[in-house]
Length: 453
Image (tube, rainbow, N blue to C red; front, side, top):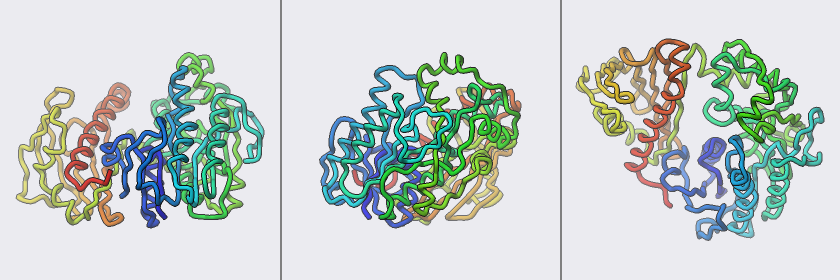
């Protein structure tokens, strides 16, 4: 099937796109930035440039679209003002209206995200798909959003997405810091219900809805066992090996987040009965197991960075560039002044030692790394022996994927000075690492064959 994805560069879009590509679907994405799409999309696709918030897109590559997965929408969790609320509304409601106007009339299936916030704030009611909507701002956005979705041609399915649990991105980015610090606790009295879902299951639901013709109408995108915020908080602390901190008073949330605090403390007890009746089998239905999986990279005071990028050439053609130590200088931001000083072997292999110098926020540093795994053309691992970190282990993977290579970077690292170092430097270091790999992705995207756009 030829499938169009909107919101493809987001957390859900990237994961859904990989699964669709593995299933043999031909993928088209709409993006406002061709460069960003090339850098961050981890699957082969055709990129159509356009901004659906401004109007329909007229492009011949959309004429053969058979299926759609619609994920676009301005992020919700940030302080609201009238301009932000308008962006939240228009990116979803007007964007979907313009999307439908861009599609062929013989479309087979239209699968769209909305949100579990459709039900408003009802403390104890178990929310089934036929239940009435709420009356707060996000509920009203969902009502109008689903009205637009109903106008799409072909079969229609709506995933009312809950709180997505993932180890790299999404809602967990906001939650992890205070809990890793050991001060995370319930919000308010902690009695509000949380309708959560593991990233693998929300991805599975979207793909299931696209590929199965009996799936129509709204489906709650949440796991079978919602939990109260207090129970969720305790499970998250346990998964991180921390004690649960005190509850955060509602007035503090209100001062910090303003109106968005109502979103953070909303109580929605979503039912997953319909998705199970339709035949979807959940991988994670217990919040303890889900959080144990999501938090696994952060054990023992370690931090974790993860990135993927699709390259249209096979590993045999990609790997030779990375096995040359001096090419590391090319793919490292010039501001780091990265210089190879010595390589212990004429060709990199297992056991090779590499000495180099660099500057970290302007401070000179020396680094010695050892190649302690070497599996050409699919994998190598460099491990810091001497340097600024207590631990730095970078796994480079070159996975054969859809005729090309899925380049995967996984970095486990630990800052010096233990918890004190983490408290004062973790966010700065995380930002620096993200900037380094962002530069690398741009470099690689420019040196490989571009997607059409």
